[in-house]
Length: 345
Image 1 (cartoon, rainbow, N blue to C red):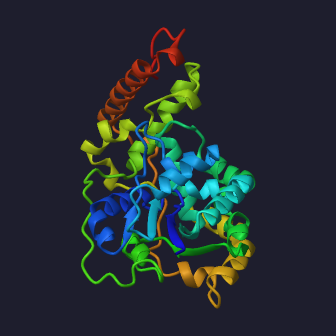
Image 2: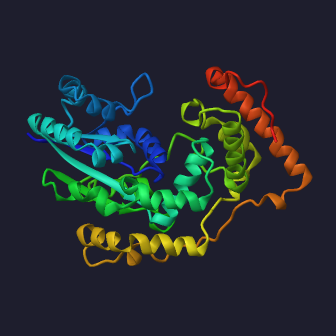
Image 3: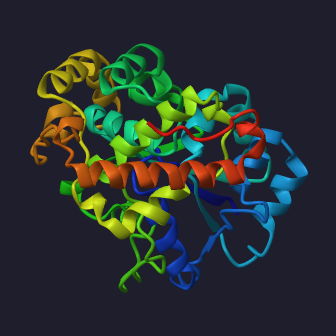
């Protein structure tokens, strides 16, 4: 009998961590419904299934999918890394589909997509808080529009998946107005329509949230300082832990950062108008992009301006920057070789 592999494939910044946590909470519920939740990570912390596909190891894939699934005809896996894996790796995707076919698996994929202004803002925050860049928002928008088609141009990204008859793919709009993303995923036709009980809540109480306007300002300041010190931002380890360690206790996340002015939003909408129209015609026939994503709460630009800082807030920022750079230095001594002191400005 043909088995089914269900994959929740992201995209990034669409509550994937929350979805994975609730999947783990409901592992027994899934098994009662004949669905085996595959282990998401392996011991080294890597996402298991994407790692296997990248290596194109058929024996490992066969063992992984058929392990402990004698009584389950449906397997479920979630990893936001799948989006880029599916859209960028044509040869890897072809290998994966051929391998599944030889093992008599059919593939169903679910992908959440965000309205581009909201998505670009979220990715800007994500990269800023991990010290990946020190760009201002206008620079980042330009980079996204002109050099990141594989992240924000959905028609370009997903046309091959949509057109391939071997893949049954669903796209879900993401945003607060649409409701709980986990429960929407579970309610997709052909997933768990027969489930009649209540899904259990997430077991993970740790927030995966943005650092707020102050936190983004601080992260950008630290990135600029690290660059002045000659530190290679791309090679730093442990870059994402400072938010949870230092900023969440301060409650800065409640003052949510949104870096786009109204003109920025209009620019982004114009840029993607044609490609979004083509995408909608394929996946949401009869609907326009604005009819799908319209009606959401309008967000106003909310950033921290340096001149608005009080003397006490400046001292706090300086203290936090010193602590965070000290932490990064301890974790990444080679990246700081030759740096005499922090020289915080």
